[in-house]
Image 1 (cartoon, protein in one colour):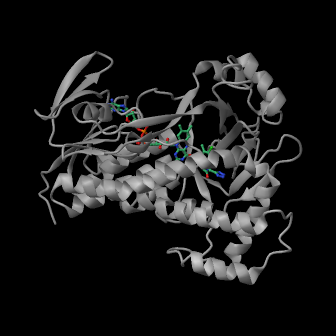
Image 2 (cartoon, helix red, strand yellow):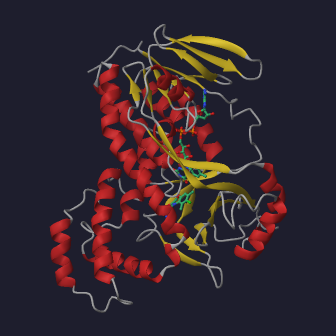
Image 3 (cartoon, protein in one colour):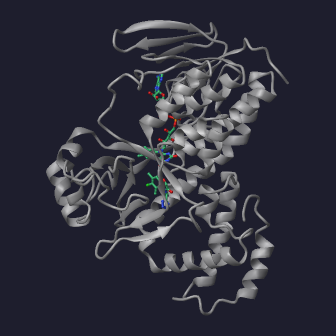
Length: 457
Ligand code: FAD
Ligand code: E1W
């Protein structure tokens, strides 16, 4: 079904999802206005000094591709390839565990601010109007007015709307407004761990001080550090630590104590982070949690997507990738239905089970990251997983591959992961090697339980 080009939508939030959605919808002929709380990142000094980065995987790239010519290319121009996780044990040398079978199965480190700028520019080029310094304050759904406030001057501005799309992140103001009108069944489960971001600058000659094409992990049981590369030879380090307990944000409260923690637990990383004390004291720990909603839309008047609808813990590196898939799905439903309420309902039905699945897998991956990558039983299961993939590559597809390198819907990936994990655990229980494996029995089991997976090769 087609719609007239005059149909208008207002997007709240010009972050990652808001700016990609603006490109998709503007290119489909919608009249798009975006309202963003912060200043224009192309001109403002907002967090200029800080480089925060994110892992972009195949799902996210695929969504960028759907947004039309030039989008994926513009983003990938700044991307740094990560071939695998470089695990830094407490003692001994770091080891690279490849993510995939070759360099076609890799992930990409992207600078958040550069990514946001690239998408914003393309959104404006596609005809979207973006208003900065516009913080959504309240919504009068019956009158069809949304009130925005410019925090520099405290000036309010009232905007007439037919329908609002909430891409305003985990603390969504639109969600709060919708929830006041009719409860969305909101539940937030905070993780009892938070995070802190630090920086590794380049060596004196400008080169990277640790392997550039990897995601670095320092697993330490109850906590861990990771580092992602930037293209200037710097790395952004993130420490994940419990909120309470012996080694926690409750006991490590200032830069000096953080330095002592790194001397003890992350000795090889410490000399790489010269500004540890100052970086530590500059920002409070970031909170982590999972947001569950029973409803993502209020009739045809408003709908949520990305973190506003389903914030998740970051341990699978999929929050943005999932938000980008949301954008493509919502744009598709809006194109195929002339009725907004129908489009929003169909969007929610398609995406909610998948969002829930990646939320669960992200929670599970924290344990795996901080703990099991150093556990011999887990390593044996991983060896078997690789052997099974080699024998039956279209049926036994490793969990990480389904989530990261394929477009397998998250809910299906979760279902197959559970089946595969049982097979791996049962076949390796009580053994230290794979020499006992009965391959023909496994073949029968794999063929019975795991149908050929679309996209696997
Ligand atoms: P956001 O990107 O948060 O954008 C929301 C926008 O709305 C912002 O621009 C904000 O200023 C604006 N806004 C907020 N309130 C208002 C208001 N009242 N009025 C107007 N505008 C408003 N994901 C990955 O895929 N890979 C990773 O490697 C990864 N690593 C992560 C690491 C950490 C430590 C964390 C915390 C998250 C990570 N994520 C990662 C998740 C990712 O950051 C989010 O899923 C993604 O940013 C969600 O996009 P979004 O557009 O929904 O929200
Ligand atoms: C990725 C913040 C973040 C981002 C990520 C990942 C992780 C651990 C974290 C998951 C992963 C890329 N992961 N890495 N290695 N095994 N699983 O793949 O984005 Cl903490």
